[in-house]
Length: 155
Image 1 (cartoon, rainbow, N blue to C red):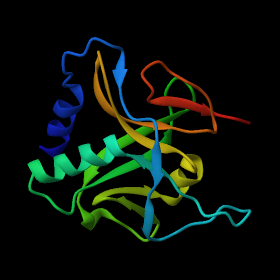
Image 2: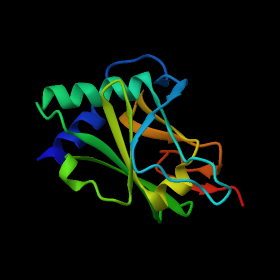
Image 3: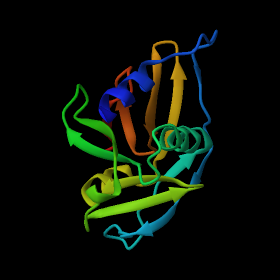
Image 4: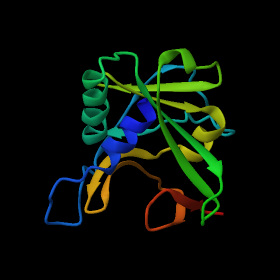
């Protein structure tokens, strides 16, 4: 039910006359659980845009589920080697291998292996002519498919 609602929400597209509307400035999210560091000792973190925070908080409010979070996972696959998996989950799905990032009440949960690939990325919510969806922008991505769900990393 929740997955269907998320898909319906992501597919809705208001009648905008331009290609896309989203905020590009993200603020570092606070790590509230399970901080992880890379091999060089740098703390792995992501940023969340105001648009992503607003959308997550709206979904939590509309569904009356205050413990809802966005889980982001990276899996092998897609046309560029890796793909993003976005899912809305409750707090009982959080494990000891997950980092929890929060900004203004919105929470994003990322497992340690995915976080290694997502470090320094920005999570956004974009509204485009073809629909609306959560997106990740990474300084380490060398190429991505047109829909933005598949990517490859710099060597």
